[in-house]
Length: 290
Image (tube, rainbow, N blue to C red):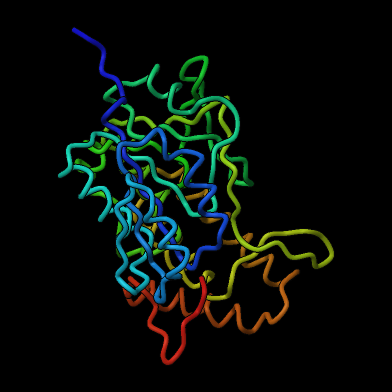
């Protein structure tokens, strides 16, 4: 029996939110390897000039809902369309991401197996994640961020996709745990790096990365959701997320300006978790960048 290949079965999705012109170059870095690229624009007011340039590419299918649907719903929309269009795998990319190093697509093609739920490029960050050797080119890993992944769409369907109630933050962790609990592996490349930025660099005593205050609402609420959901089935992940939550609060206390604004959102995140209120946080009369 001929070994399955990823050629002609791979599409991609990029989720936009008020992007800058760098997104054009980022798309160009991987678009030639895709059969189609679904562009889901979560911007409330799309950039007409920029999106016109994006839509010039014949492979692009562009969708704007003039609303921020959240990362999970945007990814699910693209994955559902990809399955209906006959694709078996989908590359998930953030607007500020591109690959560095070896040919990621060729490495995945050489290691294609049905039990792999995600093939991810390597992304270095402060997370404490277990890693164990899978082969010479990939490691098996606990979880990965959503950007820089080639996702098995059959696995996506089996675990019922990304958790839309989370909106943003912890969507990646929840999806990876669901895959592993259903017998799929999550792999990360030893050779291909993902050029990707998380948060905003600030220097208060020392350089650290931070987020807008509203992001701490989602981080707090959704980490508590993950802890509750997986405390019995994946204690390692639940404990990891608890430590991350403690560190984020500690950073606010020690380093952040306007601490009261941050703690307003952190407190609201706790409150909404205990009230089982999820989805997008409604803001009156203003749009807040997250």
